[in-house]
Length: 213
Ligand code: AP5
Image 1: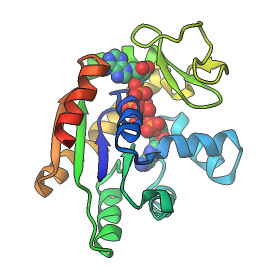
Image 2 (image 1 turned 60 degrees about the vertical axis):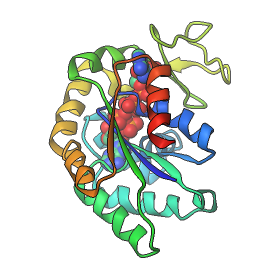
Image 3 (image 1 turned 45 degrees about the vertical axis):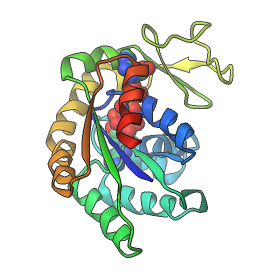
Image 4 (image 1 turned 180 degrees about the vertical axis):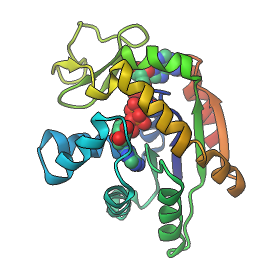
């Protein structure tokens, strides 16, 4: 099963994608995580991506598409995958669809986690991310057992640079301009479904599982 998670920054795509990947035993592929890994390891890609990410902009398609296509060719993707944060533009969606079509494949589900803008800033300002394993928490809705420490690996939790309120506002504008048109793109393909992302994490998860079957 090949699944795409759509939604505004901070809507809860990553939170749900991790649980879905576990339940359906498919890899969770987050382009944001791949860029952050490269930034942490100071690679050329990381240095380039950081300029855009810190400004709340999208990393250009020419840096993103090949990276994603290489990742989905790997062996662990044979039975499908869940994409979190890709595609973010119509050209990115077209590149993926064309590459899949060459092998007679296609995306099965595009699921939008719908959260209004007014809820997003609170979500982002409360998010804390593990510096080592990347696990995500929220200081109010999903707090770690020990403040500032990751439950999973014990490393320090930080606020992401791009989660500062002024950058969040820019990311939301970019989302509405460049990513939201994907809703119509996938509606036209007949694979679009939406869940109410303002509900609790467990209810959102159940709603997505009901769609996936
Ligand atoms: P990326 O890492 O993909 O960020 P994003 O899409 O902006 O999404 P987030 O990770 O911020 O949020 P999320 O929806 O996963 O929410 P989460 O589950 O963490 O991308 C970062 C940057 O990389 C981009 O801005 C861009 O520059 C670049 N980039 C990446 N991919 C790219 C691409 N394809 N093309 C070009 N550039 C690209 O949840 C948020 C918070 O809310 C958490 O604290 C969580 O605990 C909490 N929460 C989640 N669900 C609930 C709930 N139901 N109730 C209450 N709280 C909840």
